[in-house]
Image 1 (spheres, rainbow, N blue to C red):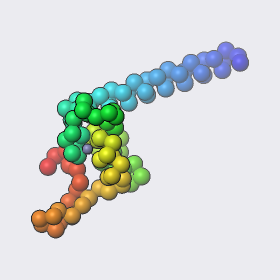
Image 2: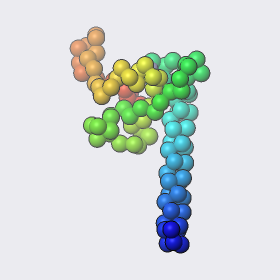
Image 3: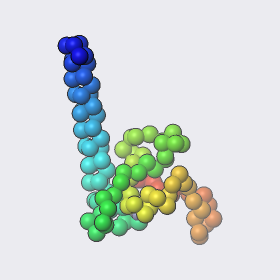
Image 4: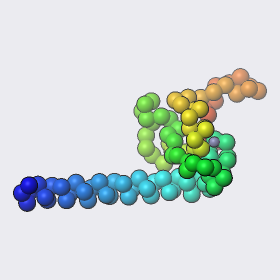
Length: 104
Ligand SMILES: [Zn+2]
């Protein structure tokens, strides 16, 4: 490995470290915004055996973004049950409504 390779590796490491730091900050922001509660069922993360995950409200597979407005804290059960569903039928009105909305 020559000095050019070393410099390239160092630059890659710095960019990767910065990227991972941004992801950690973003996840922290989502957790704090949600008051550490699942944003679907409101169960508290502190009572869960598993750390909650940051879920994409509109899944990435449906071109959902990584923007904070498209992220929600989810317990494992809600994250696994929701899969790629973004809407459901309201039992009272029979209307199709979004499953989750930060700004109802
Ligand atoms: Zn939940």
